[in-house]
Image (spheres, rainbow, N blue to C red):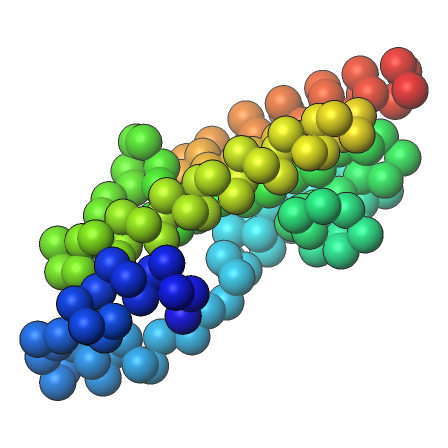
Length: 153
């Protein structure tokens, strides 16, 4: 755990955690927001959109989906982890830690977006809830942006 996050916890550790809650938290394994990303990739395939790469590490921030020819980076931001203003929340337990963690994620997102834009990359960020509630709308927006980039680059 990063020093800045440890500094937000009493004595640098989580305290007063019930055994049941500890067991649950220890069993949580990150999946990298895969279900939402898979949903988006499936929609791209069904829409016949091609030319994209997954988790493209050659670009700053390792976008979830990247269109190299069009220079379009797509990030799927989980509502909890990235602090969605609509449905994100800060847990009541260990609030200072979680507030710092989520704020650092948001700062990193802004930095990556800024760096990519300076390189001429179009950055699109979809909130998790957007893909859950309006996947077709997200795909329509994306198709429009891809077509525009293909004609202007």
